[in-house]
Image 1 (tube, helix red, strand yellow):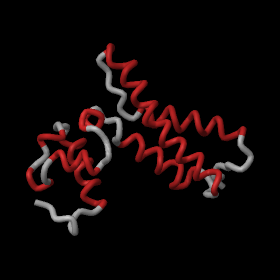
Image 2 (cartoon, one colour; image 1 turned 45 degrees about the horizontal axis):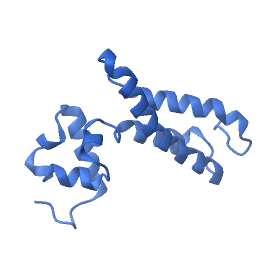
Image 3 (cartoon, one colour; image 1 turned 135 degrees about the vertical axis):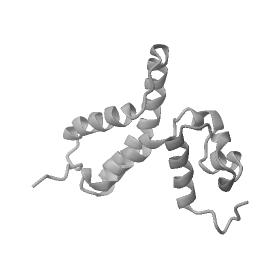
Length: 134
């Protein structure tokens, strides 16, 4: 349905947004998006991990926080932000496993916890500076 020339990053964003807004499983994506297996293949992860939300908005939110104005951008802060995005995936998996017996979803808790941990730890790194509010 979708040719390689039409497949752009905006489609990936649209797939993820549609799926999370509607709350449907990946396999129930409308035909206009193409085969759901293409979606999870293009996102680079196993289908069960994507269905579980391990590669969802938490990583995107963390990247936006770190690369979108929280820290002054330099090589050190770029490495720090990249590490934060990676830690967010593990944090999501751990929080999901911890909250599952309680029947609670992790939602954006991984993003919140990771960003706060990295903001608090930033004080120990002289080359990584928060952007001042003034």
